[in-house]
Amino acid sequence: MKAKTAHYTEIEPTRFDGGPAKGVDGRVLIGKADGAQNFCMRLFVVDPGGHTPKHSHGWEHEIFIHAGEGHMLLGGETRPVSAGAAVFIPPGMEHQIQNTGRQPLMVVCLVPAAAPEL
Image (cartoon, rainbow, N blue to C red; front, side, top):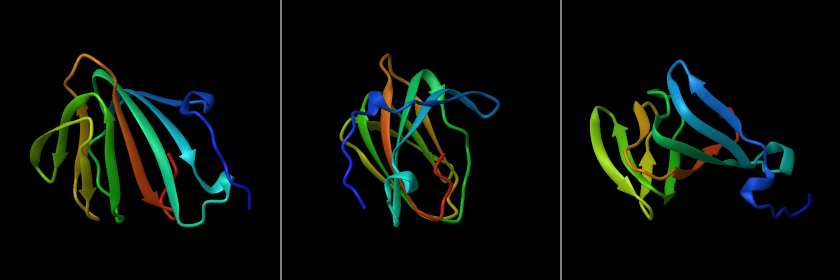
């Protein structure tokens, strides 16, 4: 197994812009292809006015807001978030990330290896 360093801009994004998502670029920063056996680290960049889909799943995940500001829908409750915020989402809780600011909202997300990487 090899160590990895890469700037996020070196990783090609997957664009989500239609259906339940609007204006979101997703990148797998560290995943199975890198030899990660326990977790997947992802970066989502949400455009101003954009959002991820409302969804829930059977695994927990952890989120860190790296830049920007917005709202997190967490189980029917909307909470403001901004750079520096850490969010824990338990399994089964409906959630969504919304960018309410004027700059991109950069969100680092960790999920277990058994979850889909994107």
